[in-house]
Amino acid sequence: MLEIKDLKVRYGNIEALHGISFTVDKGEIVTLIGANGAGKTTTLMSIARLPRPEAPTVIAGDIIYDGESLLNVSPDVVVAEKRIALVPEGRHIFGNLSVQENLQIATYALDKDANVKDAYEKVYSLFPRLYERRKQRSESLSGGEQQMLAVGRALMTGSNFIMLDEPSMGLAPVLVYDMFKALRQMNEENMTILLIEQNAKIALEFAHRGYVIDTGEIVASGTGKELMENPDVKKAYLGG
Ligand SMILES: Nc1ncnc2c1ncn2[C@@H]1O[C@H](COP(=O)(O)OP(=O)(O)OP(=O)(O)O)[C@@H](O)[C@H]1O
Ligand SMILES: [Mg+2]
Image (cartoon, rainbow, N blue to C red; front, top):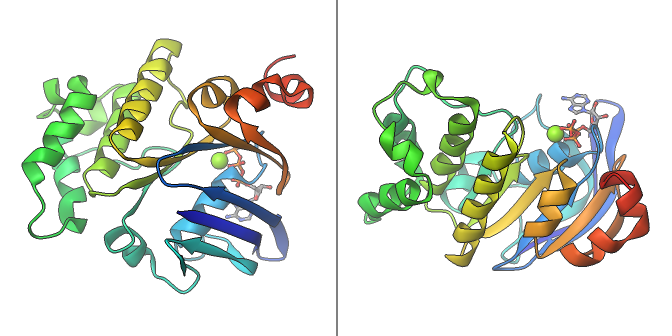
């Protein structure tokens, strides 16, 4: 579904990714794990084709999605036509709007004949907490609830491929677990997932496959289980 080929990108004169390659097959949960500054967010930003200055410049390699290169595709086309949903780092929800209004905004990308009611039902069944709070101003949600809203909003775009940048960030352990269970449920309902995580332990537990990224290079790959048992990965990312 997604193939990253020898991707090199830079910010100004600084090369942030030195030629990384990885794939995500339809139906998979694939995780990219790595420490602060490894290049995880940079990878997602490159795929989402966000405009400069925030986004890096691709200097070599390719990003192939459903058989076509995304390199010359604009960000709105990535969302509305390619149907790639992004849950960015930090939550970027509209604090002065209610939960329901935040979800509603995301439906702009849906086809005219898409069933919006089903989309709401799907989000509210995955995150019942959001249903309880649907009329509440989003800025007054807890951090964990805002994170759920950010994922819910991505679901409202009708996408079947979602990229998440550290969905566990700032969540209490029990909520991290709930978040990953919701992701697994989404995956079982046909969502392909690319998951960026610093929390290697839980990411590898839930993902089918993973890649380890270190200062702009992929240094290890395998199934979640293989990586969890890899001594180098254990030492560097799983606390021994
Ligand atoms: N807009 C930018 N301009 C210049 N350099 C940047 C920019 N964004 C990121 N970088 C640099 O690129 C490298 C990779 O950053 P990136 O944000 O991709 O890391 P990350 O793996 O997501 O880290 P974290 O886990 O801390 O979120 C870092 O050295 C960072 O300083
Ligand atoms: Mg990041």
